[in-house]
Figure 1 (spheres, rainbow, N blue to C red):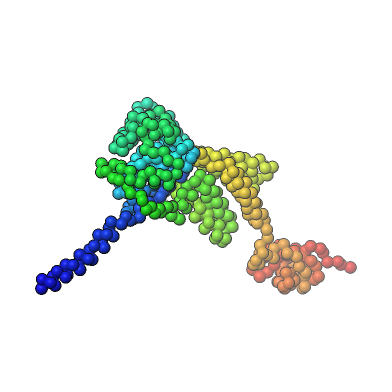
Figure 2: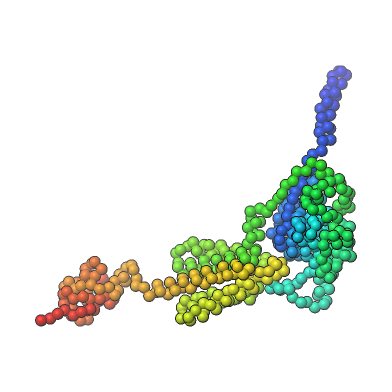
Length: 443
């Protein structure tokens, strides 16, 4: 019995030994890459948040967020920062490539990271908060300005100090809108590293000790690195594209034109469906983009002027006025530091001229169609000409006329002899009222 127990123990020890040896073999260090390229919007915040959550589920050793942004919305910025602070895996924010920037909201995200790094030839800062109404920055009184600035600096201190950053210098990016080159940021202890590439960043971080936001010490091992670059989903790319000013303007124009075509030419269906979908997508973008009401009114005025140009003879004055109004409306439609501008001149011209031509042309077709004779039913016989086959003898006597390849009962207020040419004046049931075109010759 003792021999049996000893044998079983030996077998179990032999099974555990390979397992212990397997744990000693270093596993691949999984690094997840995300990218902030452009304005920080709710769609960008959703993408970064989803990426960080996925990296944590996969137990990534490190998350690298490459940044090149002019800034963005405060709510989206705070959402990203909250995900960084809550991340189980350490997060490195890397301003890259050369010429990139982490301005405004990007500055906050950079300082919130476990590791803040910049490439040579990059800059950060200029993080003064802006208050905008209708897409335009507005001047506020001193008390309100102090309230906004103090709230923003306190928010920065809440995480930058915990990360060991130079809070006093960082606050000048808010209070004085100060910006820093990568060297100034490193010397001022705003960032941790200057590295020329992502690979150099990973090599530098291998075995480097750091302190997490909750105070826990951590040393990352990046000996065997496997990287996964996570991009936006198809839905996120679509939504990000929709909220671009140029695309929003095109959706607005296509939506208006599609519904206009459907209303003026009922039954086509396709223009109405396309127009409705385009307008719904445009309304979605309006919830995110800072829309200027003046721009919308100018575009509506342009639409009205194009219709009036088709109805009235203005020698092009109304049409030209519509083109000018739409161009001005497009350029004023979206204007905000968030977008770095508004609708581009190329997009405004490219959409305005075809829209003007189509709107005026369609309206003229509608107006002309009202003057066309009906092509179906008995109404098509109006103004048609024919030949009298049996005499028509006044109001009491009715004869037969050959019209449109058919024999019809006919009546007239004047006698008409057989063989005379007549024109249909009106239709009364199955009887045609006619008038003579030429009188029959009498001896």
